[in-house]
Length: 287
Picture (cartoon, rainbow, N blue to C red):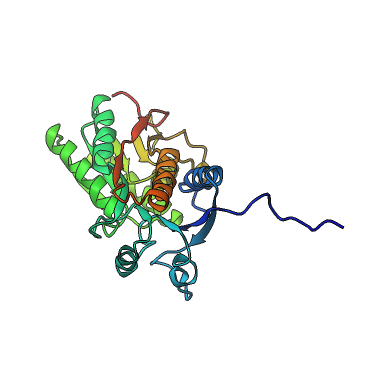
């Protein structure tokens, strides 16, 4: 009887990908791309949920990170500063997506959040909107700070007559409640549009405004960020959201290709900023 074989060949090495949330739709295209390219180059991939904000009691970096040939961190808070310092001292190949940039010598992959937010605001301004609200995540997220700067620069450059930011947690029920409360503010302040930190916030805000009798985009326009659909969370039928698209597949491909390059050739300078683009859909109208 011939022996049972589990696979065709052994991997050249292992790449561990620490992900803030394995079920987060934003990261899924990156994870799929990473796995496909790694496999095509002879590397196995292990995905591990890891976040500084979670209540995990196991040290997953100690458990699997040090045994990896290369590491990819996907999401803010997946790597502690001391972990990165240790990896640099060990000469371990790694890249970080969505990090703050605080670790000197590390390779950071980022998107130009500020420029993308400015593009979102420009789109609204070009459609005649001048009283635009910014609804953002808490400012301890570095992305919140960057997108808020894009909003602020657009307000200044286009001499807009209104500037106001609302900070909100990313829980959908809280977002929906805020959307309901915004109805009064929209009418009182004569607001015509909002730029939202992401599409989850945009969906909840639209959902709440619709329940307050405010038609989207007939009476109020909305731009989101990330180009993800959360319409399944909505209590109402809502239109497809005009949004900023991040190049997830390109980021995933670049991350794994650079880690493999580090493993095989010792080339460690891989930092890069990626461009986003606006996807025009159904939530912005011309005034």
